[in-house]
Length: 155
Image 1 (cartoon, helix red, strand yellow):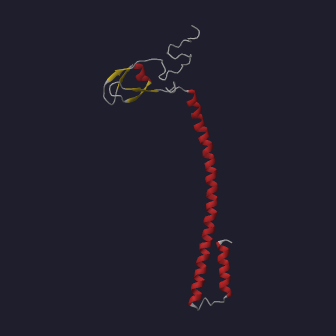
Image 2 (spheres, one colour; image 1 turned 90 degrees about the vertical axis):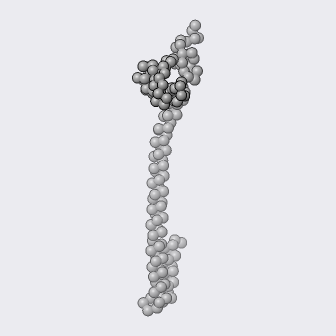
Image 3 (spheres, one colour; image 1 turned 120 degrees about the horizontal axis):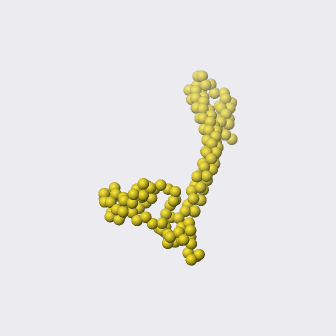
């Protein structure tokens, strides 16, 4: 039995008592209380309906978000599996450590080509050693771990 049904039952009981709501103080009080209970019951029913509707909308949004996450994060996972720890060779930025202060620096292609970097932390300049070696010792595209780009199996 819902709250509205219970309030309707209570209202029927009060009417069955044949209480004079116009002259009796107690009758007026009971009438007002039943009126308030009716309003509360209707408000609760509205809240329950809104709660169900919001729950359905949240479920739909959650499903949509799961689809978006799958597309976004599955692509990243596939890319990460194919890369060496050095990062993507197509990136225009590289990370190096300043030999003077140890600060990690991110440099772009232009600075890399110039061969000289000025550390923004300690203001010292240092030359970059350009090497094709992979920092992790993994094979490069030719299967070489030393960076010479030759297939050592053929030699």
